[in-house]
Length: 398
Ligand SMILES: Cc1ncc(COP(=O)(O)O)c(C=O)c1O
Image (cartoon, rainbow, N blue to C red; front, side, top):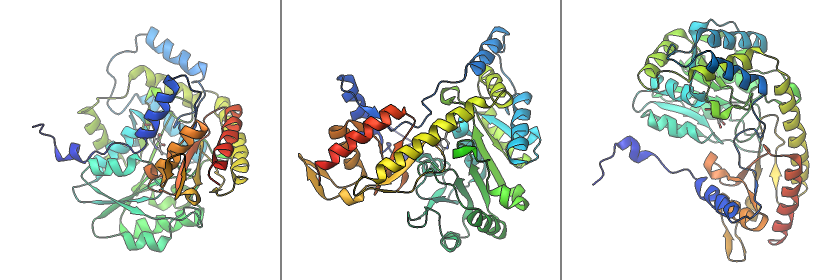
C-alpha cells in the first residue's frame, strides 16, 4: 500500500479542475469556448523586460545567486515601496522568492506551529487555507456578506481570536471580489492585531491594478505603528504580466525574513537568477505598460459590471481593481435545463460551459458557493460575445 504523509493525504484536488478539464475537452474538439477563468493578464510581458532577461543570459548570469535574492532586485523592491507607498525599508528586510506563492508559503512555514490558527476572510484566494494546512496550522475562515461589501465585521474577527491565533491573511484588492478593504476596517484590524499580538500577511499582488490608477495602499498606510508585525507579499506576475517568470517577494521584519531565506536555502535555493535581473528592470524601468494594462482592465470591468447587472437574477458589486468580478448566481439554483440540474456553483459553471460555451470558476473554490468568478483577462470583443451567450443560455432557464 502506498504510504503517504498525513500532510499529503490532506491535500485536496482543486474544485475548479473539473470545469477546467471540461473546457479543455470542448476546446480540443474544436468548439469555440470563451475562457473567463484565467488568473493571469492576457497581455504579453513588455519587450524591454524580455530584453533585460536576454541580456542577462548573454552576459552569463546563469549561476547560483544569494538565497534571499540578488541585492539589486532587493534594493529595487525597497525603492518601489518608497515611491508607491512612501514606506522606508532596507534590502535586509526583503526576500526574493519563486513567485508571491513561495513568499506566502515561506512565511507560513516560518510563523506557524502545529495547531496554530490563522484567520482568513471569505471569499478567499484558494491557496490560503491549503497553505496554512500544509504548514500544519488551522485555517479559521471568517464569513462576510455581499451586503456589507465582503468586509468582515471587526467584532466577528475579534470573536474568532483564540489563544492559538497567530496571524491574519489579507488580500486587497481581492481575488476573487476585486474589492478593496476600507481604511476604517484596516485601521480597526491593525489596532486589533496590535492589541492581540498577531502578525499580518498583506498579500498586495494586485496593488497596481487599482482602477483609474489609484495609488496603492495597504494596512500600513493607515496603521504605520504596526510595522513590526506586518509582512507585505507582492511580485511581478500580475503587475507586469510575468506569471510564468516566477518572481515574487516578501517584505517585513528582518529576523523573520532571514529565517525565510534559510528555509528557501534548504528547499529551492533561490528564484531563477536571470528572471531576477528582468524583474529588476520591470521595477526600475518605465511604468507605462502597467498603466496601459490597468486602463484596459478598468474599461473592461466597467463594461462587464454594467452588462451583467442588466441580466435578471444576477447580483454583483462592481470591482475596484484586479481583473475579476464575483457574481451572485444562486437565484438560478434549483432549476433544471436539458438534464442539467443547477444546484450549486459547480453545476452553474458546467451549465455556462455547455450552453454558453463560457468558462468561469465556481465560487466554492473561494469558499462561497452562491457565486461564480468571472475573469476579464480577455479582450473586450470576447467579453461582449460572452455576455450575449450568457444571456441566451440563461433564457433557457427562465
Ligand atoms: C491573491 C493571490 N496571491 C498570490 C498569487 C500568486 O502569485 P504568483 O504568481 O506571484 O505566485 C495569486 C495568483 O493567482 C493570487 O491571486
